[in-house]
Amino acid sequence: MSNNTTDTTKDSSTNSGKRLQNVLAKRGIASRRGAADIISAGEVTVNTKIIREPGFRVDPKKDAIIVNGKKLPKSTEEKRTILLYKPRGLICSADNSQGETVCDLLRQQIPERLVPVGRLDKDSEGLLIMSNDGELTNILTHPRYGHKKTYNVWVSGIVDPEKLAILRSRMDIDGYFIKPVEIKILKSTPRTKTFKLSFTLTEGRNRQIRKMCDQAELRIVSLQRIRIGPLRIGLMKPGDWHELHKNDIDALMNKAKG
Image 1 (tube, rainbow, N blue to C red):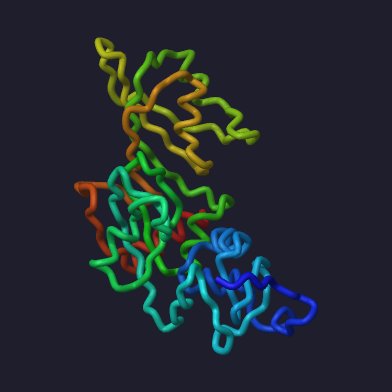
Image 2: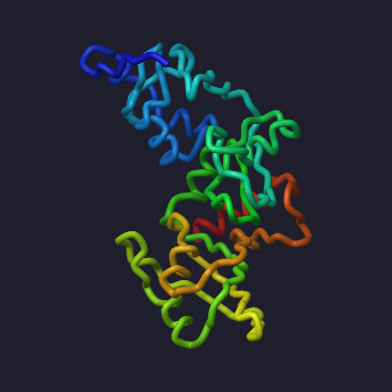
């Protein structure tokens, strides 16, 4: 990748065209926020120059836009969205430099370049939306829409009224006071001191449930996302996926918008 950086005073692209951040989002690279992060990290070049400004103006028809060494996908690619049961051990990323990703899992099955909508950490499993629809990705990842996600979590430790009160409080996670989380006890095995809990979140901070359990002195044994808005896991197994059609997507969009 070139070592040249943006010179906004000399390049006329900054004064016309479309914002680079929006172009990447519409081509299914990531959400607009995710695209901004990719650009700021210096992973995008325009006409061989590294661009670090998400608002940099480009002409997608004329400018040579490269993301992580690959040409920007053509806009003629058909929009496609699927629901995947992410197995444990896979990373929610298009970059496999840190290990096998959900994109690697689907590469031999789906020709379109789909990216994760939201995240599940490597040690978690369950429902994950994959899409190349930038508008859908933005709506489902933007905090203001507050769509609900439900997780089944096995924990080791004692879950008593005091622990439940801690978990249901506006806990301080990385300097941010989270919204109260709906928590239910689904199953308990007092002999082994393990409990199956249901967490329903309207926001998704980075590794939020794991950090909540840390503060409550509970160790997570397994974490599975079973619901995203109106979509439920049903009989899906790790690695299973199915197409989301217009009715599914409309339900997601309408649920997200309230």
